[in-house]
Length: 224
Picture 1 (tube, rainbow, N blue to C red):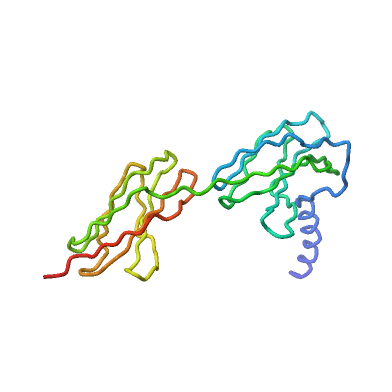
Picture 2: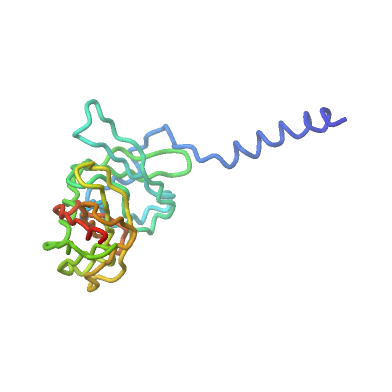
């Protein structure tokens, strides 16, 4: 009985899934407007777009295509389906810093797609540098005090403190200090008479993590 019911449900499920699937039109129509005025603005891991919307009532939305010219044989791939012809802005996220990407935008109707519009190149910015000054205060009993100069960039919202046993170069996060103006951390998860190395990475409000800072070293006080 169960097999019989399942055999009846499977075709229905296939029909429902086919109806829900979003298919890219393959037929190209020169009557659909091309997007030739795509403007960009870049950040470290994001590129924002602005364009003039079309008044063509046949247009259902826009496809944004991207390729990375630094990748051999890279082709344009769809990275966004913007399902409203009145839309004028989009942000492409999770990109690599200091990388150039190429973009095209096409309008589409229910059963056709426009010719390719103008290709635009946009380059993401470099990651933030970390804190400009960092110091580890050594010789304290069962602790190491880390101080730094607050980062000048107003986008910074926290500091990630990383530690490694001296000369091992195996880094792990020991804490996150929230607040751009906070500039101190006391590490008590250390042993007496041991040497440690520290570095700091800063995080922005959009979650982007900087390059690591210079490394500082401290040795805790020996037990008497």
